[in-house]
Amino acid sequence: MIQSLSDPQHQAATDSLFKALSDGTRRALLETLVREGEQNVQALTEGSGVSQPMVSRHMAKLKRAGLVTARRSGRETWYAARVKGLGPVIQWMAVHGALWSQRFTALEGLG
Image 1 (cartoon, rainbow, N blue to C red):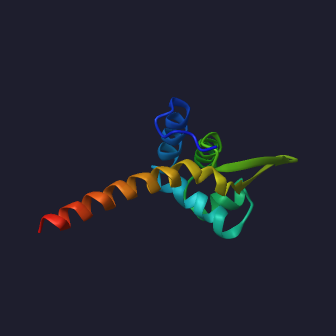
Image 2 (cartoon, rainbow, N blue to C red):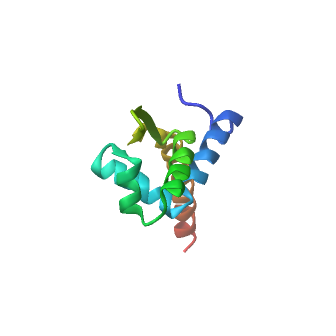
């Protein structure tokens, strides 16, 4: 069952996702995981241009937003993208995209 977009829990989850995706470094880290698969923090740090502590903080925010999963292996943490985590954002975009499409169609009808 799809939650209502006005449901407070759904809104909180969507807000968390948008906040997590609002940072370019986090988007780049997530894109790396989607493109290259599971990576450890060291590999993500080498490719990101930011420090290891910053990568870890960014990954924690992505994890809290449900966009990545983390697993420990010895002293390393490995992250993988969780594509289903984008569901609320995709649903929000679909609803609002349809509303804007209706508005543009109405404006075209005025001309």
